[in-house]
Image (cartoon, rainbow, N blue to C red; front, side, top):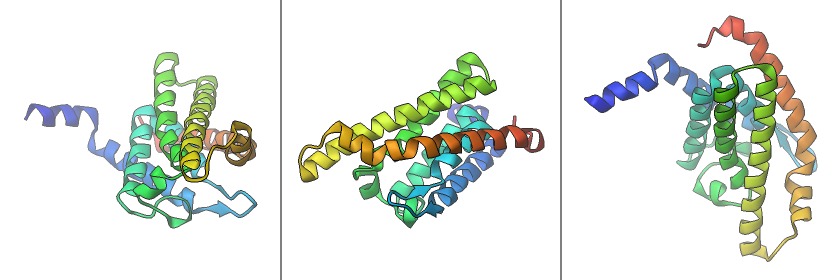
Length: 187
């Protein structure tokens, strides 16, 4: 009985609805792909938007729900993929890195307050953490399957082509969430 009260105190019903909607938004945006040499999805846009619009606690919970949905086989990842195999694959570290991004965002905004410059700073640092974790993960998994690979090569494949598009998505997500915040009235 005591644990039930604790859960109710931490997440109200409306919080659970927002978390579910956030996870769905991330899934839908992960399916939106811009075909180029390295395909770009709107997944990071959704992660940024969910964190800013829902806040660190609910936003991070939405990211965790999204990752768990994909882990159990619901096709929520890019190109309608799913499963533990995707998460344990070479690019799975970037997906798991979204959780770290949410935790970094939550920590920084908690201590410095929800101001625009704080959100920008926390998301840029969170993105760097996501890139770092994902790159190390990629190098380990790739090395096990194909042999060692240089860091510069992995950065050229997995990070450098995404920096500018991800920063543009960050700006768009923040602009949209700040514009919608009076309408959504998410407390």
